[in-house]
Amino acid sequence: MSNQETLLEIYKRLLEYFGHRNWWPGETTWEIMVGAILTQNVSWSNVEKAINNLKETGLLELEAIYRAPEAEIAQLIRPTRYYNMKAKKLKALAGYLMDKYGGDLESFFDKPLEELREELLAIWGIGPETADSILLYAGGKATFVVDAYTKRIFHRLGIFPIQVSYEEMRGFFMKHLPSDVALFNDYHAQIVALGHHICQNKPCCSECPLESLGKCTKLINGHKEQRIIK
Image (cartoon, rainbow, N blue to C red; front, side, top):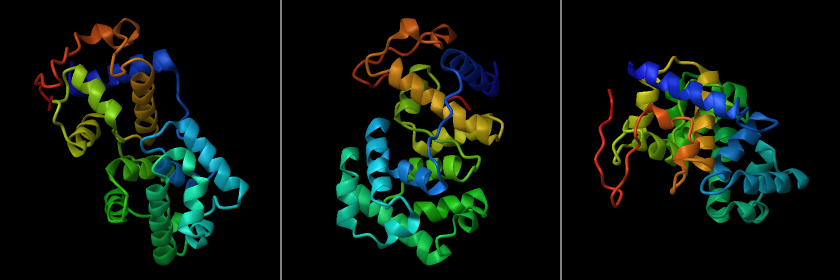
């Protein structure tokens, strides 16, 4: 199979196994952006607790975050771990959007993908995964989000080497898949589901819908070399 056929077959099997994931949850564009920051290194159930805390105090609004003291935000998002750092990131994002765009998210997202991505990556605390999550899920831009699950699963399938970078993984998916927001959205969500439920640090391969695609890598001290298909 070609690279595109392989990736689409993987998606097809995951979709048949898990069903559409309907990701990313959020009632507003800004709420999705907030969730993209809060979800770093923590389960989504904890993110929901923090978002509910912000809602109950009237602070789940862009201008409200912009004006609220950082310490107050940090206390409300304590369930998400690293809450002081995340409060600082929320303030940085809100400050940028208020100062440059007057809080107008439609104006912000009404720009080409790569230009927007550069802007987000220039904001303090916004890394590639968070930027792409904001662009895809909040902005409806066709960028592929990759994460630790992506690296683990596709290394085990023999597609990525263990030392693959974020940009190499993102570029591979964007090169070999149709540029489709809905596809990128659900594909990433399927990968998260597989990594969370089955392809864990200690995988349950007998339950994996991808098991018959080929023998997964048996890592020895995490250093067995793999190729990256072009």
